[in-house]
Amino acid sequence: MGLATFTAVGLTHGDHTMKVKELMTTVTQCCPEYATLNTAAQLMWDNDIGCLPIVNKDDRVIGMLTDRDVCMSAYLQGVSLSGASVTSAMSKEVFSCNADDEVASAELVMREKQVHRLPVVDSEGHPVGLISLNDIAREGAREADSRKSRQVSDAEIVRALAALCAPRHRIITTEAA
Image (cartoon, rainbow, N blue to C red; front, side):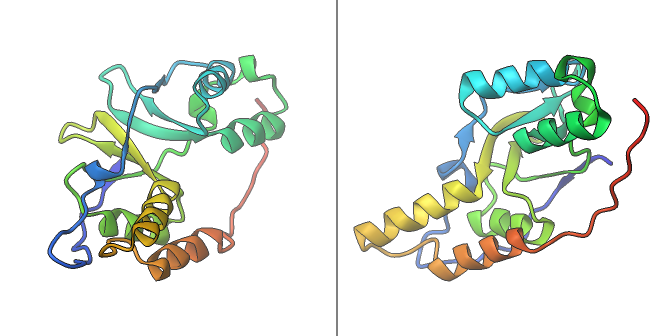
């Protein structure tokens, strides 16, 4: 599956609608599609991150890989991390957003697709950042502490977390490596 970009009409809070670029983390690490799970795990460890956008030779996001994906893939394939490619473990259906999208739009995609993080891509599909449920929750807490007009409500955070925690039915097959 390819890159799916969602731009939904977001919720407006007050006079200002918060944009993804205000909360996103700028992407500093991506992993090439030809790398091994060992390389990806090392990048995650060295950079204290839990996921990596996987990019093709044109630097376009073609997948997402989490630390859990690395572990479960190696276990299910019965191979060492150096014996498996990132493409064997990555999520191939990528849900993303753009820096100018509303945060409410990104949160809606996370909730509907049950993903904790979205790569932020430019118009060509190149990664420019990453936004996570953690970023949104931290912003909600910061706004609550500052007692200013809320862009992120507690109810939105709870709805997103509840949707992410809902069980997904998966068919797991083990194939010979």
